[in-house]
Structures are given as C-alpha cells and as structure tokens.
Image (cartoon, rainbow, N blue to C red; front, top):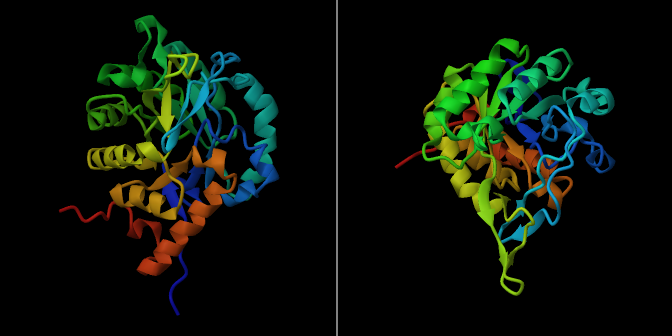
Length: 309
C-alpha cells in the first residue's frame, strides 16, 4: 500500500496543515467565505491589507476584467489595524484552534506606519506578519518601498526589531531585478519572501477613449501573470536561503505544483477565489492528487525539483 500523502509544511518555524494560503486582498477577513466552506481546511489566510488608520480606498470603477485576469485599483480599503484586532480577529480565532494560520498583511505610506502596525500586531495571537512593500513611500514622492534595494532595507530593517512574529516580505514584480530585492529583504531580517504582487497594467475603453479604471492604472492579477510569477519565484528561490511563498494566477493543483517545482515551499491563491469560492480547496486536492500520482509523500519531495535544461 502506498504511503499516505503528508501535505504539512513548515515555514518560518510555523507548521501549516497544508501549503495553501488564501492571498491578501481576495479573501477579506474570511467571513464571506466561511458561508461556503470550512476555513479550518485551509493552511492559512493572509487577511486583507491593513493600514494604520481606516481607508475608503479609491473611487470606482476600481475593478475591471482583463484577458485571463483582472485589474484592480481598490486602494487598500480596510477598517484599520485597531478595528481588525477588535472586530475581525475574534471571528478568526474560532478556526485557529484547528490549525488555521492567520497572517496579517500590513501596508504603510511611511516607515513609521509600518513600525506602529508591526508593534501593535506583535502583541496579538496572529501567526505571522506579511510586510507589503509595494506601498508608496510618501516621503520619497510616492516611490514604492519595494522598488529599490535601499527602500526594502529601510522598511524591513525598521520593523525587524519590533516584530515578535515571523516576518514575511511581499515583493512587487515591478522591478528590474527581483532576486536582488529579495536578497536585500533577507539581509535586513525577513524570515520568508512572498511573491508576486500584481503587475501594473491599464485598460482603455476604445468607445469612451477613457481608462476603464478611475485611477487610470491598476494591478493585473490572474492566470495572465502566472508565467512571470513562476519565473520570479524561480529566480528568488535560487538567490535566498529563506522560504519562498509563491502566488500569481493559481487556479488548480497543477498551477500550484508549478510554483513548488520552481522553489516555493507554499502558495497563495488570490484572484481564483473571486471566481470560485472553493478555489483553495480545489488547489489543496489537486496538489494531493499530483503527489499521489508521482509517488511523493511529502511536499518537500517536489519543492525546487524543476529539471532545468
């Protein structure tokens, strides 16, 4: 009899029951999805991006369909970190006892924003903090922290002494050398890297001759970005010694396996959740089925095992 497949993984010292995490920005705080599935079946949830103060986000229209994906310029609409701790975290706690990992995604316009959010969240029972360095540094004219080695070093280095939780740094793909940026994050104290965030895109209505999004441009996600994301995960996994969490257009188990073969220890499922509420469960099942087919018993049997030419 074949050995049973073990989907458990360990990242930053945290044990996950399986390697599938709902990506930030596509799962809210889990409430809506809990009506369709058992959140406890997931490996984890990266909650909606949090800012220090509540944000209303950008003016609509701020979501648009694109070929093999979607564009969004939601603008980090969220209730603020204190409201999350008071109102949303208690709801999530009921699933944490069964092994669901909760990752708080934080986004700041200044280093001080990041520092305060990390300090406050470190004293809660969340499992990890995901630092979104794709945010504009208002003190530097709006340039994203994650777009330069110096910006990444500054952001990660500032929060590291305050962070009592495993620190995951989420990278923007809108850079020339993603591996260089990842190495800077590792050097500044990151415990893991997650990538990719959305690619900057634009869609124009040829009849009105105006951009479809009120913000003119937005983040492209979905299957259209997957080849770029897989390549970047491959580049980063070969450059750093800390775990890599891959995401970008994952819709099924084989998509997830692609990222794992490229070097990802776990994956995040994003846009697919907006189409199929049970997308994460399908990905978990698909990974298990692939491993059984290939005679693998542990996730580590496939991580980084791509056979390059």
